[in-house]
Image: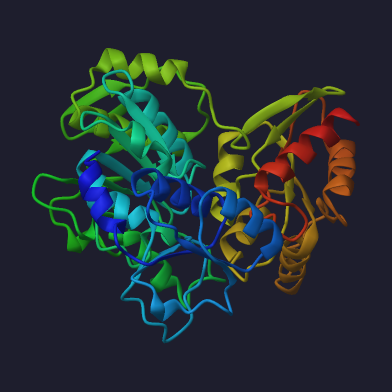
Length: 434
């Protein structure tokens, strides 16, 4: 890390940190570490008394509500990713951690985005690259990128799981930019599906000569980068092998389940080759890799039923992929917070699975059930439940011994749970308490 270049971003400036969650705290700590003379102000919509006490202890200046903050009076505003910018706001002094990180550390960064698969792909890529480099896994996976800066050397690599919110308005791109896929998501944040997809496209739009772009062949952006490697064309899989522009290798031993994860591994192998990781190192890392929590995670066998937690599933296509990966599934639990996304593809898939018990719950479950009824697609193995507890109880009564009861809800968790992790933990507890 070039400490002087980073100091120049903040020294002598009046700074506002907008949002004092995990990333806001990280921004304050880093700025105070390299510029102790700077005391950023804080703006947040939460409990100001609690925030004020913590922020002051960390060296902040004033703490305001979002309504009180005079945004135009600051030289620099560091915005947290999830905050929606009001229409018409002057954004000339606005930035984010991800923007500044890519500005300064982009040449040593592998950025991975996509509606689904980015957490697993980022995690396994970091595990593979760590066989040859000191590698940091950062970003949307839960580690703010500023947290590693004071420990970052120029020879290190950074695998950045980067969300649409972190890429929105970003004028910088990483050395390796991966855009895995695009499905309807976050339409409560973006004015259109195109705006959501365009935000993610900044993963490659500002790359330079010699940088590597890996894009899904079905994305509408592939014509923007004629030299990109395309997932599904240049990077592919068959029954036995990974196929990349420079190699065909056998699919290695792995705990990751499903063809979608095999394709993610093929992407990781392409990145590994870019950084001269050997096939032996790649195979060793993949063999050792433990799947992430809440992503097709076996949670135990109770009363002869195998319970699998895929709480990370927040769109219909993720649930379809989970079911295709687990043919032993007897029961799937579907439903959560309704963000208005289109579930027609999932509805058509479930209507064709007469072998499968589908337990619908919460707002999304009720909506899909109603839409299936309106389309005359309901079948006798589709049932409604009030909540996750009732869904587990009903599902257990219909699951054969030796088969799988799968939580893959195709919806956000925020109406009834703190996050998808809590939802998965509650599911595991309910399974154990049967």
